[in-house]
Length: 302
Image (cartoon, rainbow, N blue to C red; front, side):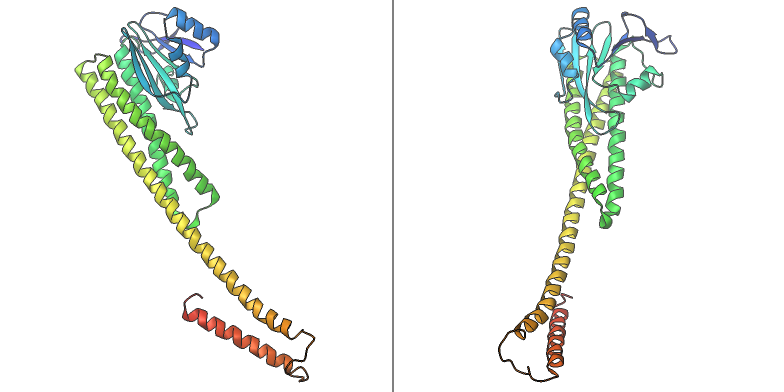
């Protein structure tokens, strides 16, 4: 799907166009083969870069082709459970964004929740980069908050909490790579595009924010690792207690079983003619049990 939008400094709102116009923003969502052919022929876009923008596993990077700049970045999916790739193309007279799935910040721009001047291509680029950074920052903060919450209930960790931590750990690992690569791309953008001094400062702020996000993700991963280590120790301790109880129970059962088995043999045994033999044997068994329990208590096993 290809849509065209325009907003100049004088316009109050972003307006949708029926066709391409110089100074517009081209929003491309999951284009068909026919639309990819159109983008390639009409706007001279590199086909491989278009396909890269649709590949969620594509590497973050920036390329300059004459006066045109291709920027490939990672963006968070709407369900906040994975990452997508976003292609931003800057030419002399328009800006284009292309992705496989629609993004929340794109919806906000279209619905005029965000001021987006399409005729100012460099400012439009900075707006998009800022929105991507804010999305990462909010999602990272949510994950950090969840990790802290789950850390408080570590003594009662359920399978649901463990699975949640594993998913968050996987997502944080992806975020770390995305933050690191984005900071590098932002640095390269300053060399590919000539910004005004004010805009350059904004881009430098984005680099700092990406680096801060990177450090926050690393800290959260360390917290998750500590939770998992504590959980493993706790589980091992509980397992040892269960094994000890089962071992004690087995020994307690084995003593009367061994004695009763001995006196069940078809040979002459002491006290077999004595009518009180059962009580003698029972007393011996109880005595062995008591001795065994006292030894365990002395060794602080019980």
